[in-house]
Image (cartoon, rainbow, N blue to C red; front, side, top):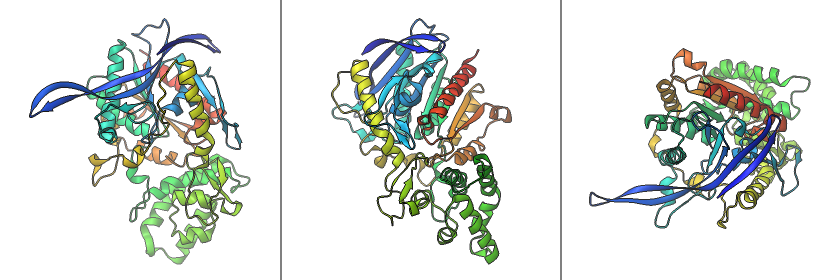
Length: 468
């Protein structure tokens, strides 16, 4: 469906065209080694916004998607980038159901056309009759299918000479890094990557018995969260985070590596330091053997108040399902936001963009995350650092913008910092990777001051990345 709209911004009106449709993915049909043509395999839902009257040879276009894996693009679409946005409220001040949908004068549409992609089994994207959805639910298949959506749209719209960017959030950053290499290998070079809440190396993000690398990566986040909830009275957030970062980079890895070789005095000092930084009791840190696991942290920090803190955004709190629960059961951040985004998206599609399809829109594809395949990484960490490094070496003009939330417990900022410090690129290209920090969580744009600042930061990045 094609509709036409006007967006009022501080710099004047933006007249734009919206197209909500599907891209058909086809595959070769081979029988007994004989090619029998191509057949449709899936239909991928997209929503595209293009500025009326713009020169397609100079107008940038940004392809955006969220993560999960198994999430639709509704979050970036309606939370940050699109011309319409959700008002869902914020931590401590949620909007009553069903939320609101309003114009977004800070939309990235001011500087770039936008194409939001819902991977197979999310949103309105489905396999066709006779095909297996699971064939698309894996690392390589996902990169290839989203890459084909990008290629087809660019070709159909005559945009091969337009500056092109990818914007991903969470697992979408994993996808974006791999997709950059994939697309450039096929001749479609990019001007920029936007990585919101980046996760580029899963192997050091999750706690694994015998591997202590994840614990220091979470410590600055724990300290920021403890500060947010009053466990560092009289101190500035920046000061608390800086102390946690210094300990995490220097002393903490040594403490963990020494194991039982720590003296009683060394262990007591480590317990006291970690308890003070995390806001947890010394008894708990001692019982945890100096290794505070993140899902347990969410349940433990405010246990004495009967509350849990959010994983996606630890500014959010909610009642604990059980006062004795070992780990977080429900994420109060997701609970506070999901309804408003789902309702606004349904209204936008049907009432404003003219979509008549009555099939369910899956904000999260049922069972996709649980069934996701990483078979390409058998016996190895799931990491795309090599792919991002290759994409940057291949294209010395490729700029990378990384947006990080201080209260993001799903993809902690210090973990992304460490990953990006290990890119294998020439020293001069490290200057093309920029970091921006926001005092909010995984979806930092739900915090109004962060949303406004992030919108300005992204517009500035796109201008710089696409300047000729």
